[in-house]
Image 1 (cartoon, rainbow, N blue to C red):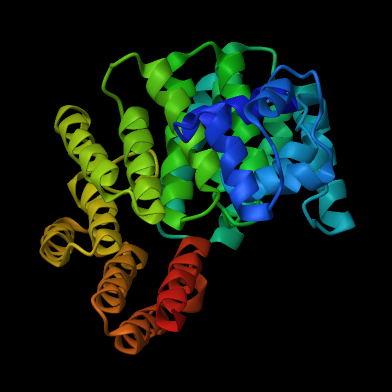
Image 2: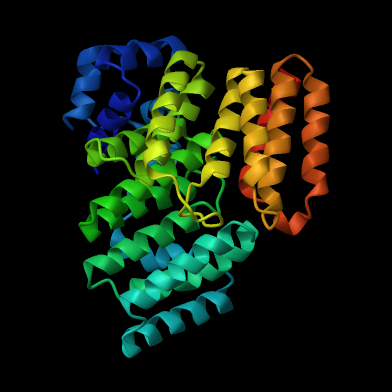
Length: 372
C-alpha cells in the first residue's frame, strides 16, 4: 500500500476531512499545512518527508514504522528469522521449513487442526510459549502457500503471532497484523478476511495501542462483512468501541457496544476455550473493560459478575483481567492509588508464566491513571 493511500484510509477511519487532518497537525506541531497539501500526499503527488511522517504518526496514532516501510510477502521468511531468534534456532526453523516443502507439508485439514489446537492453547499459555511454537509453524506454512486455503491458515497464524507482541511495538505487532490482512486477502475467503481484521482490531483496542490502525482494520472488516453477522464483525465493532472510549468519544463507544451486543446475540460461540471463539463470558470481559473505561460502574460490575459465572476454572488469566478491570474502575472513580494497588495485587496473584502482554499493558494504563 502506498503511503498516500495509507494516509487516506487512516484519515477516513477517524472520520476526518483532509482539512481536519491538516488542522490536527497544525494545532499539535505549529505547522502551516492546508487541505490541498494533504490532498497532494493522498494522491501521491508529494511524499511526506520524515518530519511530516512523524507528525502523521502522532496525530493518527499509528507507529512511524507503518509509514516508513511496507511488509512484503517476499520478506515473510526473513522477517520471521529477524525477530530476535537466536541464530541456531533460526537455522533449525529454516531447515524445518524447507523440509516441509520437500515433503509437501501437512494437508489443509491438518493445518486447520493445528489452528484449532493453537486457539485453545493461546487461552492458557504465556505469550513467549505461543510465540516460539507459532514461529516454527509460520516458517513451515510459508513453504506451502500454493493454495488459497493455506493463505487463510497463514493469515490466522500470523494474527495469533502478532498478538504475542505488545500493540505499542508497532514495528512488530502492527506490521504482522497488516501482513495477516494481506495474506487473508490472498485466501479469497471473506470470512477469513473479516476475522483477521476484526481480531486485530479488538486486540489493539483492548490493549489501547495503535488506535488508528485498530479503526482502519475494523472499518475494513465492517465493509467486507456487508452487514453479515460474524465473530470477525463482532470483534471489529468491539475494537472500535474501545478505541472510541479511549479517545473520549463515549457516545460512539456506547453506540458501538449496543451494536456489538446485537451481533453477539446472532453469532455467540458455544466453544468456551478458544481464541477463535466469543462465548458469553468473553463478551462480558470485553464489556467489563469498556464500561470501566467509560466510568460506568454499574455496567462494569454487571459484566464482571456475568463473566465470572461462566468463566472456565482452567482460564485464570481472564479472571485476572476482570480483577484488573475493577482496579481501573476504582482509579477512574477517583481512588487512583487504591485502584492501582488493587490491580497490582491481582496481577501478582497470577503465576508469572501465565502473564500476557495484554495484562501488562492494562497495568500500564491503570498506573497512568494513578499518575494523572
